[in-house]
Structure formats: structure tokens, C-alpha cells
Length: 114
Length: 113
Image (cartoon, rainbow over all chains, first blue to last red):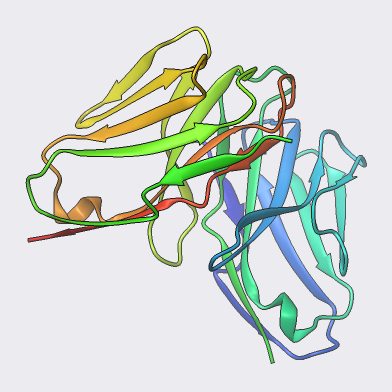
């Protein structure tokens, strides 16, 4: 069964900490995405990547960065965590452009910044 | 810019009812539409993927239809069960040739015994 795995289900971090959220997929997908999900706001795209070492800003990139050194791994980095980054973070992947296979999501990471 | 609307936002029904969840989108030049289920505090699970050349897809008690010309999709749930309680989201490509999805806000469904 194909999978997108997020390393942590729950995280609690302190304000100002550097936070790494890891996502690994085993489907050889080109595209990977990071979303955050907040009540009333739906899913908002933070960053996405269409190839190794390539990244593109989504709708809300401020306060975040990403890294994709290997095809299967896409990391989201909060350089200096703030309380307004408390949220559910979801990683997803998809095959190349013109995909017919849809998107596969991880199980999410609930991040609390205190 | 693609906009996706899901109606109703919330739904509470007794067990056994047949349900219709609606999804509408503004840019009809899409190549597929995907329905997801999300349980509280969890990630999204794919339910059905409809290609633009298809009119509908079925999986068990679920049937999804797609009408590109009117910019609409419906998810039909037959004989609802308490285990169907979840949030249902639809997603379409952000623009005609894009591989980046735009999501609706979802329909929160509660099926009570």
C-alpha cells in the first residue's frame, strides 16, 4: 500500500524554537506539498516542490521554509516558531504534471507552539 | 483563480438516510476531481477520483458524479451509517493545466444512530 508518512502525529514546541516537520513518500512521486489546516480557513498551501531541490511558494509561505534533498522526502521548517503557527500540518504528494492519479495525504502533524 | 464551494457546510442525519453532498468550482477546465474524507484530527483519505472524461465513479455505497459544463460534482452516500461521520472535501486543479489542487472547505457530516 502506497504511503505518505509524517514523522510526528503531535508536537509541542516553544516560541522561538526551530521546528522540522518531516514527510516521506514511497510512491516515487514528483510533486510534494505542505498545507496547514485551521478551523474556518480550510487547507492553505504553504510550499510545494515539483522536483528534487526545487521549491515554490504557495499561498502562505511567510515564516516557513522547505527542503527537498531527496525525491522521497520533503521537510517543512519553521525557522522561529510562533504561537500563530499552531495548526494541523498536512503533507501530500502526486505524480507528475498531467496526473491522473490524484493526491495522497499523510496523517497530519498537530503542532502546538507555546 | 479557482474557487471551490461545498454545500452544505454541515449535515446531521439519522442512520439509513441517503445523502447528497455538493461541490461547485468556478474554472471548469479541469482534468479531474477528487473527493476525500477526513476524520477528526487525521489526514485526508482519498475516496473517489473522477477523470474529466468520466461522468461518475462508484465505490461501495459512494457514488460521485462530475458535470464539468456546470462546474459541479455531487457525492452520493447510500444508506448512511454512523461510521460515515466525518468531513468530506472535494479538490480540483487550481487552473486548467495545474497539478496543484484547490480544496473546498468541506461538509461536516454526522450520522446518528
